Image (tube, rainbow, N blue to C red; front, side):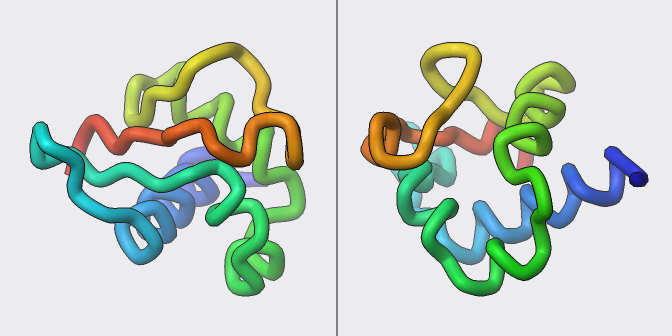
Length: 81
């Protein structure tokens, strides 16, 4: 698995599904990303890809691990566009 490629695909999907916040950054709710059909087909391990992107400081979100249902309203913020 090519992690860099997966992270780049994730960043594209966040841009596609997200909206600009007051600071001009693109944000998307975890639930929107998780429940999107296109994302479901692209990412076998969405949570792992999110963690990798966070470690590389491409995105930010609260907490270490996001779980479907519990964290659906958590904002994922794109740090670099």
